[in-house]
Image (cartoon, rainbow, N blue to C red; front, side, top):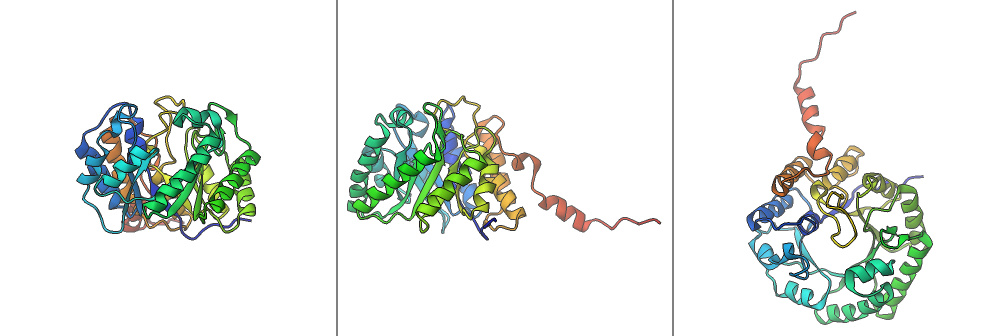
Length: 328
């Protein structure tokens, strides 16, 4: 039995994911133009940039300037990413950042150590301090991300049972801190998910916490990203992170530079709309933004619909064509 949603919500992560993953810095004007084009598509949220180490990730060294230069569109959230207190302070001081308080957890000790210098348990305990800081800043907790929820290139397969045990720990910690968690993202950080494994894990989490909204942050590293989105939608999942043109990847995950990033935004939109599932996004405008992203980056990107085009132009062409004569 499927439980397809009538509408899905897509949060765009392409600018931050893409420009952070590439090995060079791109002109500020180009990055601003891409964000402004994405805002015109109907996307409700765009993750613009990250406030991280300027030494380790020099591509994000001017995040404050990037946010300040954007001509904001009413109704769109322009968010940022931070992983430590200095990054949080930079985001707070910057102009134009819509501050969203997220918590971050890991199933993999090795990935957590590689990414943060602390193991997964230390990261979990460290989120208590983040809850306190967010509370002091007047920011309610928006969501939690559980990284490497399906597998890890450094540690290997992560079983659904192990991931569920981490969900239990996260929920227990939130209860202890007086936090009602609105949403939990299961993040396929390095592309291990396949539909069967995904639906099993989603089912287990939903059975344990039926009132918890589940979101998915899926990567298309091994080509199963869109299949995973479809599988998730059959279970009623209606919240996805995505990346225009398939921009991005994780610079600390052991990927090659050719690895795919998040599932492609326009490919999700095309599939959902063709299935009768609303997205609120103008696919043709999104395809234009994807083409602009490819021009800026300067090499082919992974999106399919951006290269093949939507079916809209063919439908318009066929609707305007004279009917062909039929012969006996």
